[in-house]
Amino acid sequence: MLSSFYVTQLAFGKGAGVFAPFVLIDTGSIETWVQCEGCNPCFELYPRSFSYKESLTYARMSIHDPRCVPKTIFEGSCGFSALYIVSRTVGFMGTDTFFFEDTETGQLRGFKDFAFGCGLENVNIDFGANSGSHNIIAGIVGLSPGPRSFLNQLDAEIKGRFSYCIPSWTENQQAYSTMYFGEDANISGDEHRRVKAISMQASKRFHLYLNGISVDGNRLPIDPSIFQLDEKRLTKGFFIDSGAPYTVLAKSAFNPLIDAIVNYFGKYGWQPMPQPQPFYICYSSYPKDDQSFPSVVFHFKLNQRPGDIDMVLDKDNMFQKFENTQGFCLMVHPIDDPGPCLFGAFQQANFKFLYDVRKWLLFFVPERCQENPE
Image (cartoon, rainbow, N blue to C red; front, side, top):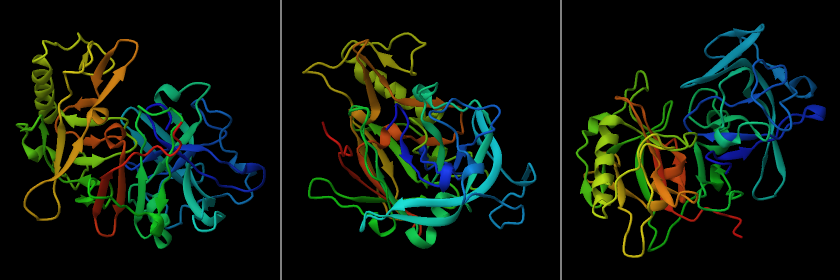
């Protein structure tokens, strides 16, 4: 975990060009890419960008490679581009040998000819508080099920299964946990922590079927059609996105949530702080012993079964305390209708998630994800 972003470390290349960068874990993106030497413009990156010319196993991708989709050309070879609202990266595709740890032997296994992008024109790439000379995030690992995504390229080995468990921001800033792929990706609970399954559409992005939201036991007046998937453009729906720091809701869903939060804290005589704030709604007081935060429940769907599959989000999944003000903010952002709505990393913390893409199911269970307690 680095600030508001969650990263993993990759290892690839051979010889002087071997590279072991930290990359953003992004279930909302297809492309895996890193910044390469020769970029213009570049973002600041410590200690260096990828020296693809020095890796003995690196090769540029031909425009005739079946993974070159769409067939765009960049400097004479297969090109790629990735757009992120106000930022973008453009460059060429290439292949190299990637290494992953085998959990049984502890040894590194090499996977040859893994395709990824070399970011050479990086515009407005911003990794939040990590940006600047101390930034060590070199790019993104795309886990969406696109034709050349990380997930699809390793499908024969991992069979559409992976799991992760994101530590909470309330933990030590050096918190970490382990991602698992294939047969090692499992999930379990107990009598107090029951594993639940919800449906997902997994053709290009991970869309979840959200029926509604409740606050303090009251169902919010949200038309569930705002969460329905637009399968043609993927610009409308409710997508789980580990690359988004916070949950984003279309205003027709966000406004009822805000109204319920304001009404709840109004019983203490509190009013939201004047805008602008770091987030949309903040308070200058923090609940005392006889006060509390509201419960928030996201109601999901499992196939055609009646009823809801509930994900209960506690205060640490919805609110962030800021020590310098002794106050807190709601960690949800609005977006104009129709969205898309995103279920972000802050709300995913301290849940273990298992993605089974072949069954189109997402399993989850509450779990403390920190693996290196103080």
